[in-house]
Image 1 (cartoon, one colour):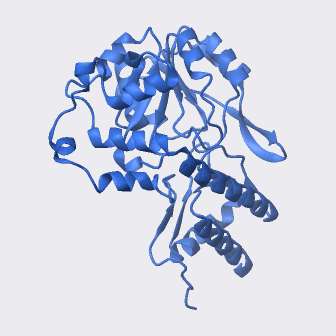
Image 2 (tube, one colour; image 1 turned 180 degrees about the vertical axis):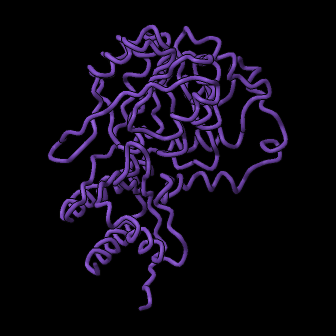
Image 3 (cartoon, rainbow, N blue to C red; image 1 turned 90 degrees about the horizontal axis):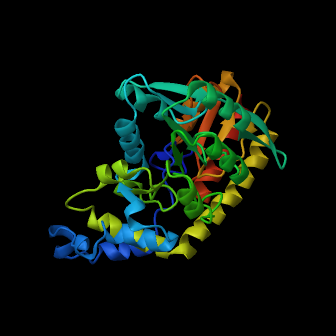
Length: 355
């Protein structure tokens, strides 16, 4: 039987990349790039700052520009922090139910991972992962890791840590360098009120963000972080003598200025998450998890994974079927456009109906 294809090319709903793209104003800027922006180093150092973007972020957050770190995406920040601070046989405390890459980096420098588990609960009737702060503190006190990592929102579970729980955990971990990975900031909350107070209060804290997800600029590979005052060595290590990518910086600033566009996209994503919650909950053996990101974790029967994967690929749809220690029956689905999301849901129902 011929397959009715809505899309003629593969739809990558497995990478957490934006299917909407960045602000249209970013494209307008690229049409008028000058020779100066391509051929000349930045001169921002003459103004006493690292770059125009770090200065902009500093002003927006009322944080000393020196404490703003720029990088090649938040992945680069993670690697810089671990490679610089973690010595051989030292420990990093990470979530068990988290991005596989966290578990790889410590081994590159001879370090060790210590994992803390999450637990599954309910939030407004929707299944969700939750941080178990009491257990986290217990493991921290026992293991005394050099570095502690928290992801909020977390990949692939999609959950956030509450402000109350985060504050309590940071209080308990003052002896370690604590990195909060906020790569998916913006989709569930755009709150920034805590950033300066936390950076001021916790001098060993680094809050990392990226322009890849919410701002849909993954191809530019640009991220930033706020570093506490005890992390002067990291700040010096991250500074680039000849500056940073001038095009990436300007595009990032343009994106930051177009709040209307990104709010509109995020609202559409939220509506489609509600659609997915409702529709997946109707399917026997499927459990959607609450998500504060641009993706959703869905548990499904193990017996259908291989067949469903093949069926979706035949319809030019790719989702991420997880196969890790903590995730054996789950798939992670990137939120696409409305047309992509509805086509995916229709295709899953068609597969189940055929079976």
